[in-house]
Image (cartoon, rainbow, N blue to C red; front, top):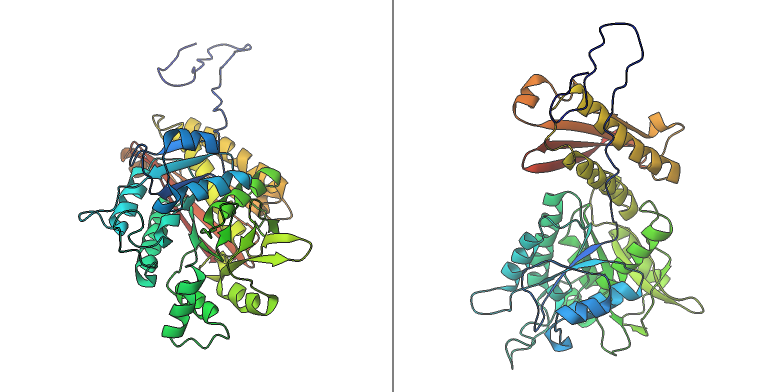
Length: 413
């Protein structure tokens, strides 16, 4: 038996008999879902250094976050109270003459490029302008500035191809003023402002939530932390295929805007996810839609199924980053990715009368012709049926020495 360095042993069979050949099986990569990157300001702690925390106490031990400085501490608290298990904290640079809020958030996102997370929360986008940094200049958040920064967060999520932005609506007073200033025909000025804010956003990789929530501290805070925790809790209980809606919000004593069924219907159709108070049932998240204009990506859970499959496949490809693009490698990748997609099918995350109807994996000579191998790349194509009407999703992953890039698109079946 001869062995080629870096490859499984190659058996040279010169005579009849029984021969042993070792096969290297790749271990299943670990994948955590419902894990957010939380961007925000703090009075102390590492700046622009993604820091993993698994409890509120760990956060408090590493960061000093006075409530007047923003909402990051409230977001962390709400995340863990609602079932979150781990989060990456990125403290932004303090605002100053040379650092705008837009630049601070862009730097924070760049610092978190390599972090393995599937959600992004940026609660300080909707903080008061000047709070804690420019005494005497505290003003409500500017709707236009908020829209620009939320668009930038969305663009970063789309670039990464594996993350969902959990976006906060503006505070109700600002929404009402915006609704009135834009001449909205909505029956409620707050709804007019919400429809304006929603109209500025368009992506399958983002979801917008309203209204703000009041924890035990007594002030109203953005809802993204509680929503991220609920998503994590739902993932743990059922899986990413479950819509994170009709879920109780814990650790909250009040909500800023009481949305009733008459108001919630049009907002839900527009892609605004409302949090509502129900007598006898408590405070519930009552929506799970993205802000996409593409009907294929209306539902947050459908989008997350596809992104989670892509994340897992990308992790699998990273394990063979130094393996040659050859039939043995193609077979191992196909087996590994196919096994994971099979588990999603068994959970009901993918739809089809058989597994073959629900998904397919192609990593072979067709997806990897010689010219692709000469570039040092390995290409995997996955088709998924996450339950979209007459739609399938194609995910294309390209591995090279710099990492794995992911592209996804839906097409009519």
